[in-house]
Image 1 (cartoon, helix red, strand yellow):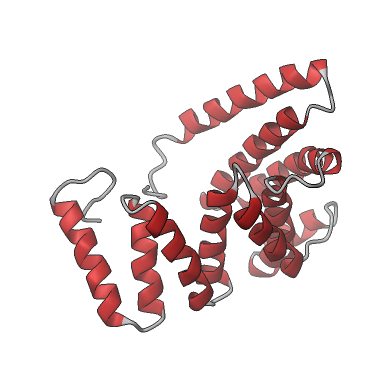
Image 2: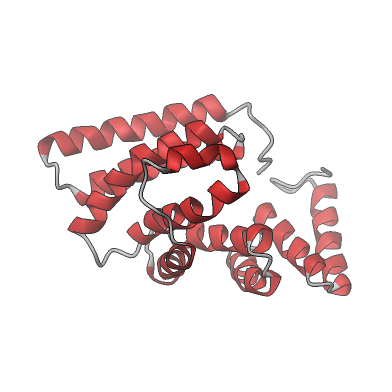
Length: 211
């Protein structure tokens, strides 16, 4: 909930390592096990995502390089699996966008497949619409991308409304909805949202705080 809180990072990495170990056991028995590949690739990818949140760009890119072939192997075995489009979509989008925003990554990208922003967004939308496991995460990612990088708050609003509507007690989605309304200049609706958030914080509802 608080992305700046690093106190649980090590526990998070340990839990992901436990998942990777279980997946490796499955893959030792069957290297074409799509479930094993899916969750292994996802776990490595989530390591990279946290590293990116911590601004450890080189480590994040290296981790992404490790996750990509696992995800691609799974996608080749199950081309109709919409959940796998989440992993390929994140790679295609970030590989196209981040090197220009963070030039330190450009030398690393020489050794990685070229990104495609439009394809990445298309894949993420497919995962959001059709995914079984990654649909919510894909919507969350699209909301963040359209809000922070693409500067398309009206697109972000579509996902913010869906997420808040499905999970009305989720403080992250609640705050994003208010932030999107601010970016759209809808001050009245934003004030209503943040008044609700303040009341929830005063009531000490789970996940809400005055920060």
